[in-house]
Image (tube, rainbow, N blue to C red; front, side):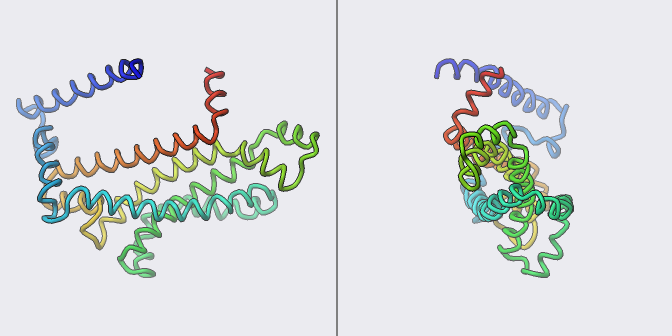
Amino acid sequence: MTRKLVQALPPLAAFTVLLLLWEAGVRYGFLKPYQFPPVSRIARGFVELSTTGFPTGVSIWSHALTTILRVLQGYGAALALAIPLGLVIGALPVVDKLTAPLIVFCRSVATLSLLPLVIVWFGAGELTKVFLIGYGCFWVMLSNVIAGVRYVDPTLVRAARTFGLKGLELYRSVVLPAALPRIFAGARMALGVGFMVIVGAEMIGTIQGLGALIMEARTFYRSEITIIGMLVIGLIGFAISAGLMALERAMLPWAGDLDRVRR
C-alpha cells in the first residue's frame, strides 16, 4: 500500500502544479477566462451543480445517475446479444465469412448519424438513447468476440484434442477461456463507444443527463459547467472500466501471470 502511495505521488504533484499554473494563467491574463475558466470558478460551479443544480433543480448527481442508467441499459443489452452471437459466429467459419461484410459495414456507420432515423422510429424518448448506445456498443463487442474465438492458438486446440476433448467440451474448456482476454478488451472498447454516443444522444429531447448538461451549459456560455460535465463523464467511464479490469483479473488470474512473465 505504501509503495502504491509513493508511486502515485509524482502524478498527483504534476496534476497539482498544472492546476496552479492554470489558475495563475487566467489571473494574470495569459488565458481567457471564457475559454479556460479558472479552477476556482470550476470549483464554484461544482458547488452550484451539487446544491441548486443546472438547470435549476437538476443536480449533478441526477445528471450522472441518468447517464449511468442509460449507458448501462444500452451497454448491457449489447453485451447480452453480442457475446453469445459472436461465440457462435466465431466457431463457424462459413457463417463468419457470410456475415463479415455486414459486420464491417454496420461497424463503420457512425452511430450518431442514425439519430434522425431512430427518432422517426422511436421518438425522442429514452428508447432512442438506449438504442443508439446499444447499437454502437454491439458491433464493437461482436467484432472482438468473433476475433477472440477465431484467433485462439491452434496449438491449444490440438493439444486438447489429443486428450480426447471435442465438441462443446473442447469449446467450453479451451476455446472460451482462451478468447476471454480479447472479449474483456472488447468490453472496455465498447464501453468507451457507449460514453461517446451518450453525449450526443442526450443533447436531443431531454434536460437530464450529462450530455444535456453540457448542451445547456454551451447555450448559456457556462464553460466551467461544460468542463465539469466532461470530467464527470470521464470519471464514470474510468470507474466502470476499472471494475471490468478487476473482474478480468478475478476471472483470469493466469493472464496477469503471463503479463508479468513477458515483462
